[in-house]
Image (cartoon, helix red, strand yellow):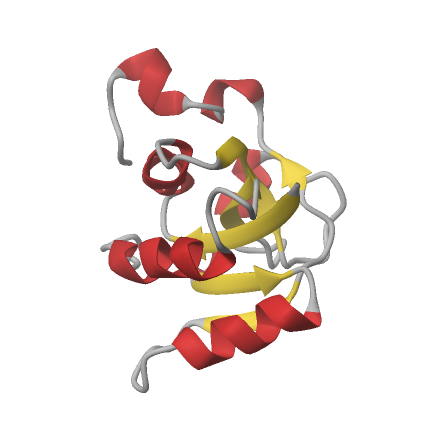
Length: 138
């Protein structure tokens, strides 16, 4: 199994896109890319932690490739969410992921491609929000 981490706006909708894919074992929403340890949702929304809302995807590379996950990521777009926690980023877990992400990046995309850091799982009420509420977006 491998991990991939993506930020593309509100994590509720992003999780839906990846969770439905064959070859994806699990997804979880959380925060990464900032400086505060174990942040809460409210702290991340304050725009003072440096974290982005993100989705960590665990996938079977024999059933779905990282390139296929990148294709899904680029199809999502960032949406209309405002604030640094909603920024677009790919957090790579290996040099191979970095190379593939850079190769796939459209010329005008402002998405950052940065090393993965600690992924802080969001509160339980955010996990699989779409299943709990029937809503896929913020």
